[in-house]
Amino acid sequence: MTPFRSILNSSVFAATVIATVIGSGCNFILNPENSDEVIRCKNTTECESESVFFPALNTERLDATCSAPGGAGNDFTSSKTNQVCSVVDKVGVSCDPAVFSKGPFYDAWERAMANAAAYTTCSADQLGTLGCAPTFNGACSGGLTVNDYGVCDDASGLPLYAGSDPDLFGQDVKDQHCRSYFCDDSFVCNAGNKCVRCDESKDAVGDLGKGACGDLAIQGKRSTVYQTAKQLKDACPEASDIDMTAFGPPVTFTPPP
Image 1 (cartoon, rainbow, N blue to C red):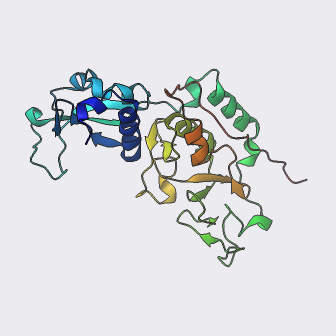
Image 2: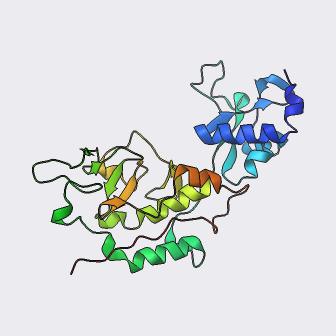
Image 3: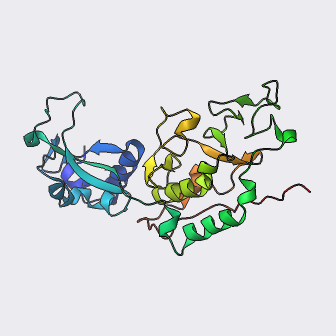
C-alpha cells in the first residue's frame, strides 16, 4: 500500500479528495501524520492552514470547517476538544442577479428578462405534454407521468416543474449559475439567493426555489439554459470564478398569434 504521507504530495490525492468531497458535501480528512486518525482542531483557521486541504480549497468550491462529527458512529462527543477538520460545500456563493453588473450570469439574466413572456402557463393545447400540467382528465401523453410537482415528466433527468409561477421567474438561470460554479447539477439557488446543494426530501411545489431539486420547464420543454451533468463536468475549471459561470443557449419563445 502506498504510504499516506507520500500520497499527500501527489495530484492523484488532490483529485481524490476533491471528487470524494464533491460527491457527499462533507468528509473527514485523515491526519497526514497518522493515517488512521482524523485531523483534530479547535477552530476553522487551524483546518484552513493544514496543507492536506489546500488542493480542495484551491478549487474555490469547498470550505474547511472544524466541528464535532456527531452521529458518525465513532466515540467523539460534541466537546470542542473533540472537534475534527472536514471539508464542505462552499457557503455564501451568491446567485442574486441584482449584485451582478456584468459577466455571463448578468447577460443570461438580461436575456431571460427580455424573454419574460416564455415564463407563462402552458397553453390549452400543450396540456399533457412534457413540462406542462396534465389534461383536464389528469392524463399525460406519450408515456409521460405526472410527477410530484404536478407536471407531465419523462423521468429522464431531474424532476420538471412549471415555469409559470412569478416567484420562480428565471429560476433556471439562477440554478444554472450555481451548477456551473460547483460543476454539479445538484446545486440550486435558494430563497436567500445563495447556492446550495438541493435537498431531495423537499418534493412539494412550495419547496421550489427554496432548495428543492428540479429543472424548470418552459412551454413544454426543459429549459435550454441548463447544461447536462457531462457538460458541467467537462467544463469544470481548476478554480471556479463567480463571474465566469457558463450557460446553455437562451430560451426562445414566439408567442402564438
